[in-house]
Length: 332
Image 1: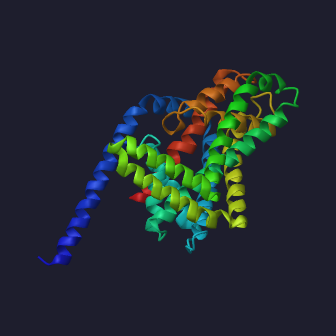
Image 2 (image 1 turned 90 degrees about the vertical axis):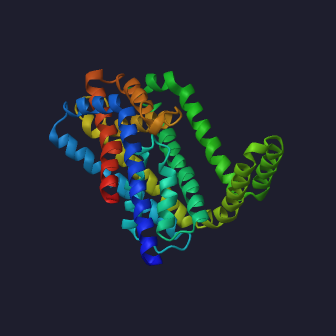
Image 3 (image 1 turned 180 degrees about the horizontal axis):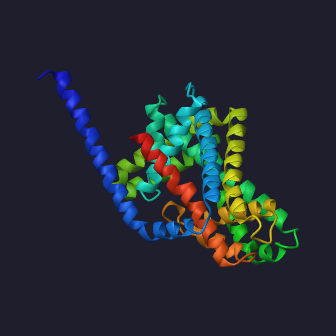
């Protein structure tokens, strides 16, 4: 048997092993989420086919905007990526998000960016900057919605009850974004963090290799990040695309609750923006549970739980399960 044939067999073997591991992870994930999935199926039964199809279309349009974001980020490092490549990565990452309890989507994005020709270090930097820009979009919409709703008679009481939590949510988002920007834009901040890791490496010898990797990533983020963020038009385009994606997602509950709630469509969208921002502060696997809790807490102030619960369950289905299914099909 030739060396080429042996290499080919090894590649095929690794591919099948990888698929097997991924299948096992998916089965574990489905078992972990079994109660949530059952509740989602119960919620779907309470909506019409028109509501289901309309919600899926809105969600898929939102993920297409996310894919455009990824392709623009790839072009920021010299790649000639097409929109369809970014959309492919967006859906595939949702599959990995489901299969790994929310922990593998970032790693999957780095892997597929590298597969599409982006250097591995640059792919890591792009993913980190994209995360910061996404958090910026979430905070901008959530804060804008909160300020507007504070002046509306129908939502004034709700806003006064949760203004402390909104403040905490904004503060956490600002700290995360500020940390990333300082790390990217200022060499002194990056050098200070490297110095801290050096001190920790002296004290914790067992983690010395990990500290070295982190230091390398910090230097890379600082060196490459300034070049990427310096492309202001592309970065502004990314933020606006993320705002468009979020607005599309926030339209789904407004579409489902139209005529069933004491809020106008615009007000419903803004309440969802505030709920989404607050849910991001609560750490849960894939974000499941946190958004449902905040959504029901907010929207039952304007309607009964029998109306609010199916809406958030269908929202979770079309923005979590459906794109993961599409991502799995694209992988196959």
